[in-house]
Length: 420
Image (cartoon, rainbow, N blue to C red; front, side):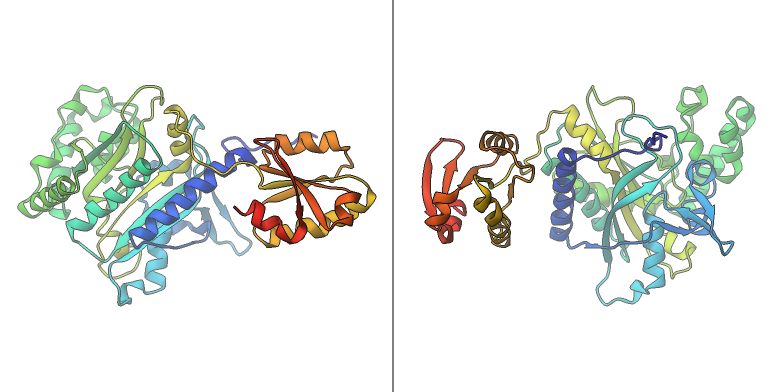
């Protein structure tokens, strides 16, 4: 029987894995600069956590979760996103009581959603997420957005477009919600089944529908910006002011809504503004979720965050022809001639590795020509040639591959030569 990889997943082979490592290290370094600390949560949680945290009217909860029952009869779900798990950890570990507030966290890890696989969208995908909990200051909204923009820019992406909106506070959202119901209700039968079920539960999500996005009522729907109360409007203006101060260009889009139920006030997306990236141009989505911690059993705690797919990021880098400066090749490749040299090779390789060099050698018994070809394929900077004559002199012949220059060097002086 031949086994195949499950649909919607991928094998990340060594050449590509180096790019992943580079991107992940860039994320670690950038988050450290912003003073965000890494959190690692389980890959599965109680199903109810996502129903409450993500929202039971969302496509994720209704259609896309990988849910199973364990031997104890408990319903568990592979995490479809990272915010709910991070907030659960925040509540369970009483981080709201920590002296340093807000609590600033980030995570990198696999998520799982059962949806139709397409370019840049997998059933198992890796998310980088950032969450800041404990502050209702619009300045931290701008900080979170700035972190996301810095991440893309420092990796070399261009033609980025930041779109921001405000979903308002609870009062503003309720007023807008009632206006949306009045707007859509007379003709809701013309919309898809999902939209019909959302009308009373969460009419804002009708605006995010892909099936009915061209319906005439979509373009004439009431704008949330017309229903922001004074407090919400002032908050949104301050976020924009901070973005201006940070010289981060943006556009205000009143039609921008987030697909999860817990968002309020600031919402944003970062897109690729250009051709060649496909139909889905959004790279990142995020926003403020001031009621989520309370929903999951914690005290009233404001929060804001974003999440992005590393697969979509890599796709964007490829589309724009960005070459990541990943390390390639070996510091040195050890070529042996004769049985005595082959016997001495493991010890020498081990010593060089302990000193921090990236080295390899032959394990297939190839002749010198074959070993030299292997060194060339693996882009070795130096070849160390070890034969009986070199052993007798406690030395090794060092060949610089770029120039062809050869030099006999004592074994205890190799680091001085190669380390430079």
